[in-house]
Length: 164
Image 1 (cartoon, rainbow, N blue to C red):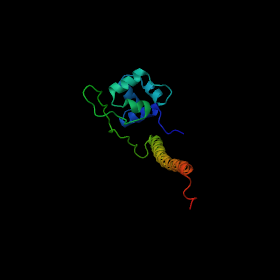
Image 2 (cartoon, rainbow, N blue to C red; image 1 turned 90 degrees about the vertical axis):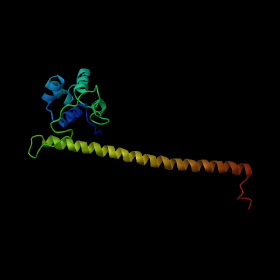
Image 3 (cartoon, rainbow, N blue to C red; image 1 turned 135 degrees about the horizontal axis):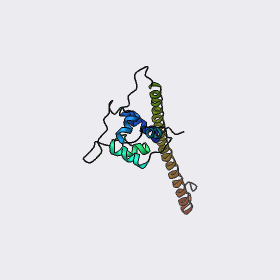
């Protein structure tokens, strides 16, 4: 089971990291709030125009938004790049205060992030195990090759152990 976030979920994570409502993000990039909601809920795929506007008006990384790979935001803006959207709460996703209406959703998000991290750590451990198995297999194959060559040499020369 994949623990990766969908594009809509990544959009919501990014929007919340900026401290923006769907309406505020929609106003920032010049589209309807309903469309932002549909994309976040994965009811609608984002149009090319939507992606282009997001990249022009915010500092979200196209790789992260589209694939989940790499950092969430582009490196510091250089001349000609889109300005970073102003964050009310900084670039870190903040949990709502205790008793706030969004707390269950924030907890669910934290649990999904933990699951994603666990899955990635498991994958790293699997790769390390695979490398150890490959090394062991290589050792076995090297021993088998040596035994094969030794047998060939013994056939050519005769087994020196049998002449004693």
